[in-house]
Amino acid sequence: MSSPGELKLSGWEVGETRKLPGMDVKKIGKDLYEIFIGPQHPGSGHMRIIVRLDGDVMVEVDPDLGYVHRTMEKLAEGRSFIKVIPLVERMAILDACNITLPYVEAVEKLMDIEPPERAKYLRVLLCEINRIASHLYGMGIFGVFLGHSTMYMWPFGDREVFVELAERLTGARLTHSYPVPGGVRRDVPEGFTDDLRKAVRYMRKRLEEYRKIFLDNPVIRARLEGVGVIPRNLAIELGIVGPNLRASGVEYDVRMVEPYEAYGELDFEVPVFEEGDALARAWVRVEEIKQSLRILEQVADKLDKMPREGFMHDKFWAKAPKLYKDVYSREGRVKLMPLFANLKVPAGKAFARAEAGRGEIVYYVESEGKFTPYRVRVVSPSFRNAIVFKYIAPGHRLMDLPAIYGSIDYFPPEADR
Amino acid sequence: MPPRPSRRRVPPYGFLAAVKGNLGAIAVGLKYFLDPNRFTLHYPREYIRLKPGYRGFIVLNKAKCIMCESCARICPAAAMKMVRFQAPDPRRPGKMKLYKYPVINYQRCIFCGYCVDVCPTEALRHVPAHDVVYYNLEEMDLNLEQFQVEPKSPAEVEGGIPVRYVFDPERGLVKVPEKGQAGGG
Image (tube, rainbow over all chains, first blue to last red; front, side, top):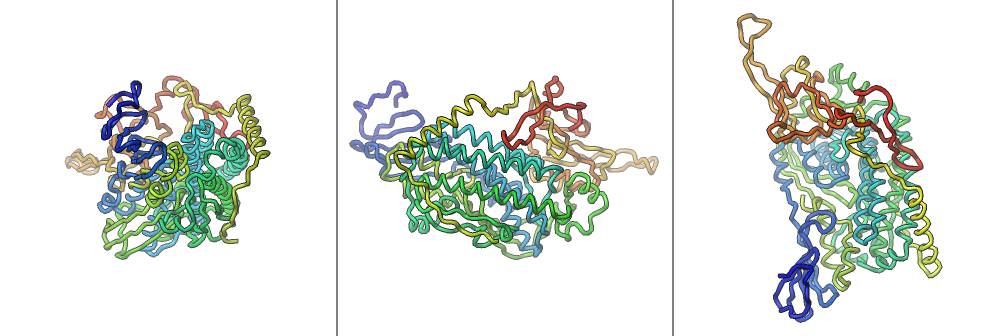
């Protein structure tokens, strides 16, 4: 081993490992090198990519997952139903509502209750705020991977607009714990929809500027066009989900194929791109943000027209004492009935899915009629997308790996659960 | 109208588009070089005046507590525990009564706000402070007396300027100094 300062390529024996900045490199044959990138946070979380290089060309790429595994599925078996929500939302930063929503829906299916109309719109509202924030986060990471530090600072700054919106709605910046079985925990505060419309107008303007400085920038086009192409049939075969799938020309979005909450009543498009390369994946995200902004405007109009009632299923609200109703009309805060602490869910199996920022998330919840679930199975979008590294990176030069990694928007804490 | 797919292609790119792209990127960069859009919070010289609904630190109003234990039972992180003690019963002179009140351990608390929302008498409430610091881990495990004291933001105690962020359609978020009386929140 030698330090990065005194690296000499001459006299490098086969089988010897040397340290390069940010990675360990092992010579496994003449002009064949094995590189360990990570697991100390190569980009957006702890994972390791094992790359075998022939000269500068990647011949084998192995994503090595599991460094942030937290046994969430097992932990969920020992907790009462409501306590699983703050647990699973720790999977994805900025995407808390999308990640927890299918779990809540599965529990609602078991209890055979459906949230009222206003609660559905409130859930959609936070889901779309989360989706925009999640895409902006992914684009920021993508930018810094390509060495485009402007594109790192801008989306992270604009993300703050949507984090601030989420904070006003739920009271917490990231870990909202917003949907609960039967409804939601807060109603929109005073003046929220006006702020929302301002944020939407601002973001539309910003997306045009993103296009000028990033997507139409010749340097970025040169680095992304034709890099990391996922052909349509390979995307289907590997079972990847979310924006990566839609960038390969597959029309699949859970919001479209199986509308949940209020998505069936909203007017929006699901952008699908044909190319399947890193550039198309960047475009899909920008177009999706535009559609999410459209949804937010529609939801804001709808919430303004609706009477301020119907945020919790009657099962949990009909017998609520006067104090609860006073708190709601004063602060818009939905008090939880004490029975939430020990929610008894009828025995059965339920399955629910939703479209999170990074793709389809699936929950399977099995209850034995006790206070805790028997089994909670989570299939997260990043877990399904991780396999792409193995199939699309080989053949590219090592310097294309950051572009491919960034474009996939892979998020290890979400994949490892 | 229900959601529907829309097929698109990435805009084509030629020599002219590349020239235009270069100039466009430089123009946008120059615009923000001359007029940067900054909203950095200079903490602790400034601090954010949190909104009323913010899920900050939690305070107990002992007079309202009915000892129902709902908060301790719903806490997902087992941060809230009940303390039990015998004390003279005010209603029955000479008799002792078992009292139990919640205490919180901020080493564990995840600020989900379930305890505040489940409390049937509003004995627990959030205070608009989120940056309280402790000197060591033991201090974070509050006892019943400490749990009733409203924690203050150190920036506020040391005379920082309260600011708030307002939405603006041109600049996103704008930082404005908070006017009006202190301690509102």
